[in-house]
Image 1 (cartoon, rainbow, N blue to C red):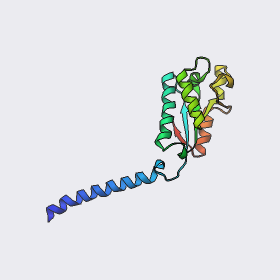
Image 2: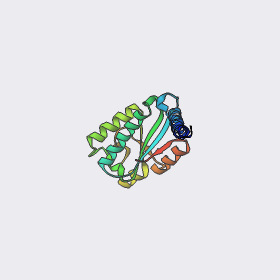
Image 3: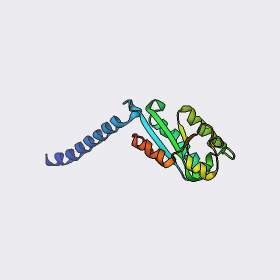
Image 4: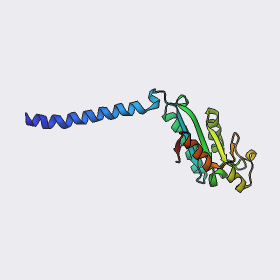
Amino acid sequence: MITVRAFTAPWAFAVAVALGVVSVTAAGASHLGDGKKHRIVYQLDDPGVDKARFVLNNIANHVKGVGGWKNVEALELVVFGPALKEFVRKGLDPEIGQALEALQTQGVVFGACGNTMKGMNVTLDQIARGAKALPQGGVVRVMELQEQGFSYIRP
């Protein structure tokens, strides 16, 4: 009997832990229908076409991962610093332009840092279509959104 208990107790504990993890995971996953709406802010300040493509793809995958736009209340991409160069219309990578436009059509807000635009000597009409000027600055916008309860993502 002692041998059976020694074998059963760890097995029973492992099953209980596994069931607990599954139930906790299922309870917190909005894509499983708990009705939670996500508010998300993505920060992009790293330079490079590859980085911009990666972040835009990451946003699309994020939305899919939470079960689609029905589970997203708001999603904002805040771009500042050297990354904003990748969103200037003149020389805009076609893949970046298409991905950004598709995301904006679905509901993504694209914010362009006013301080960076001044520093680059570009205006809002020189930035990719649909950009929203952030006169207070990109970092201030990220802070504002975090204070409103947005989840902060910096891939």
